[in-house]
Image (cartoon, rainbow, N blue to C red; front, side, top):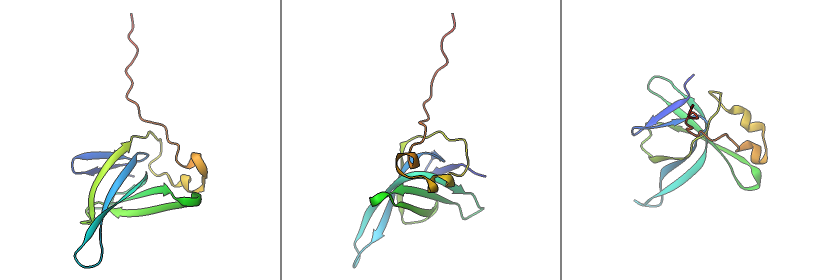
Length: 117
């Protein structure tokens, strides 16, 4: 099971809070950018069809999930908002959680070892 995602030389892990900038076509030739921000809960690592799933909590505590192909032309950018540290490759157990427990992931803080004297 894969738990890392690489996009434009940036690496994301399962448990990270990311912002996916999606290009949406409107009437005529107009396009706009819509941002989907949520927790990266799964990465499906198939040969040429790599996909990732992002989950956010919407209005009235409704969970919203979107599955994006990594090579999709409508993805304008992916940026890391907060690094998370989890011990699972898939975070589907977050679907059954409500409130803050559904979005509370430990932060991945790079700590140095204490100096020994």
